[in-house]
Image 1 (tube, rainbow, N blue to C red):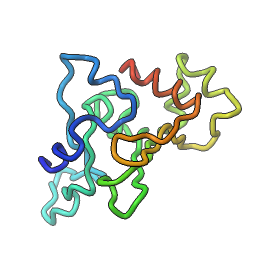
Image 2: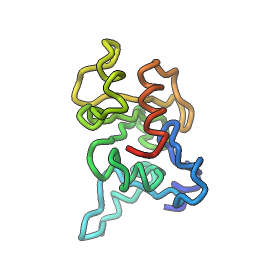
Image 3: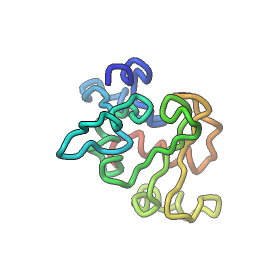
Length: 144
């Protein structure tokens, strides 16, 4: 886990507001496949390539969080989370008053999972579309 903390340094979720809140808890290591109650005797779920650093809000606590299964991270290269990833949110989780106008925009994808950002390298985002900036700006307020 320390390898992942050293590699990612801070929450990888794009435009995350967690660093703006000084009393917020430190980032946590999130596993691609949850270890479950039995732990991980084989160790295959705790390899650094299969883990990513997220703030507690995007990992577990927020209304849109990985453990709530409405935020997912998709590796874009064979290096998995060591390389660039795409961040996808379940469209139904984005149907909230703050985002109704954005989600109604014809430029916004209508698929079940919506890619809100894509990295070209860890912590380095590809160019964002206006609707993606709008979504990430609302999420940066750490209310959702």
